[in-house]
Image (cartoon, rainbow, N blue to C red; front, side):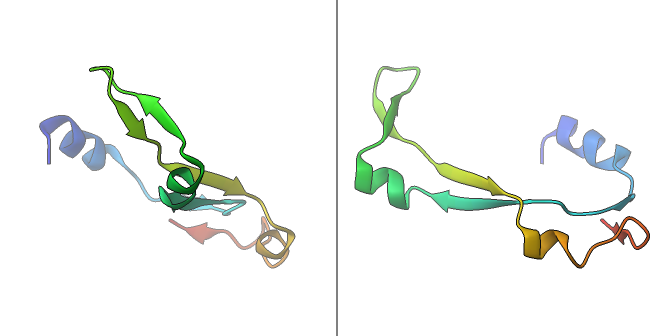
Length: 71
């Protein structure tokens, strides 16, 4: 682990929070099917990595500001 990352991890603190959404990591599965690429610093095509952020009613319903979870 890089020195800067270690310092950042040491500064992290646990806090009460409510998860309101989730990042769905789609990877390269769909990017490969659709041929989605970007050009890297060397001018070569690079398959992108996809993700999606969602806030669902079912994820939000059981949570309450009165009952935070600790992360």
